[in-house]
Length: 288
Image 1 (cartoon, rainbow, N blue to C red):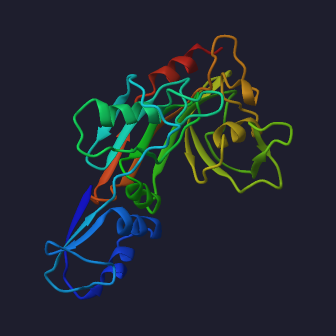
Image 2: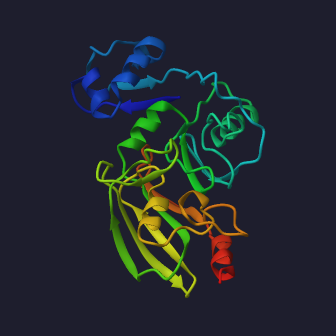
């Protein structure tokens, strides 16, 4: 992967790279395995750029972790370009390998698609930008290089979720309660004064005496945040056994990331991806 720049003023190359959000790690990797080319001649980061120079930055090829095994399983692609791929994650699938589920994760499926479904000159290593719990469905963003992952970390991503919870919720509300690890479990989280600040906003789209369908916006990104916060206010997610939401017919938490919106780190245009949430509407209508 390479980037081409047309220089408009004098500046040290290293300063130029830093100003364009190349991280120290990426600059070191370029110096080691990539290339910096000015007017077809290789240079170092100490080169002084001149007006009308053409700079080509060649990113080094990345090597995937040995823990990742590309998986030839179906993925639903919502958006793809040279730099990003956005997919819809189904239920009962990890975003990345875990001790309990070491292979056939979403990233391993994306890796197979990016490298084995077509002839690639350079191996592409996907990087997860947004993660979802194993039993949460919806939109997951990947970049096609670590540098792009770093760029995405400098942009705000507006993520919206839909959930179905027990009981009749308020029309809208803000939940602020610190979340930390449960001392009796390595998996579950809980509300605790020693936890990290967590803030969740929601509005109720529809409700009846048994359940509510809510749109949720996260202002922080704590593990299991929506699930913990909705349990905290007395409205656990339907089907979420881990957080008091057991349901005899529904064996997964009723939660989906249905919309993301962000500014593209290279094209500088707004990207908005929206998924329908018919399955959650069916769950909401079926609970009584």
